[in-house]
Length: 158
Image 1 (tube, rainbow, N blue to C red):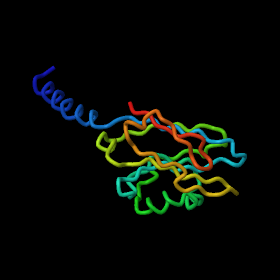
Image 2: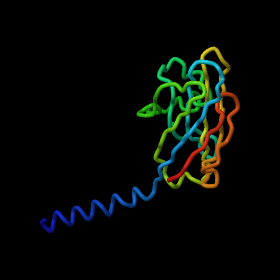
Image 3: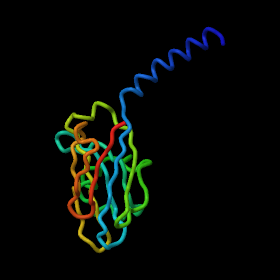
Image 4: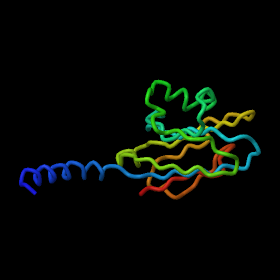
């Protein structure tokens, strides 16, 4: 290899490695109750220390006309034109598990951010803020019960 190419490669690695070190992979797992209804729509999102919307992590359910039933997420994220870019999938059936992975900046962990999930199922009651779990290292691996549709929700930091 030529010396300029090696210098360029070394510089690229030096710039890329710190960026990778400043984020973490977070695996989110929601186990739904066997509530006896159609698949649930779920919006998994982050709010900051003041309760303001920060980012959508995942939306389960493909028909946008039903997103209004994910009331808190829909209201808080309405101004985010990119809220659904690459973060949507099928609804989650009763008794099933949803597992998704996201990259989060290290600066968000233990900084007052909260993971929230809104849930809704056809012909059943909507459940805004079904789960609210602080994004704190101490909460990793400690599942929490939901209010209506979610039996347990937790996250793992990698």
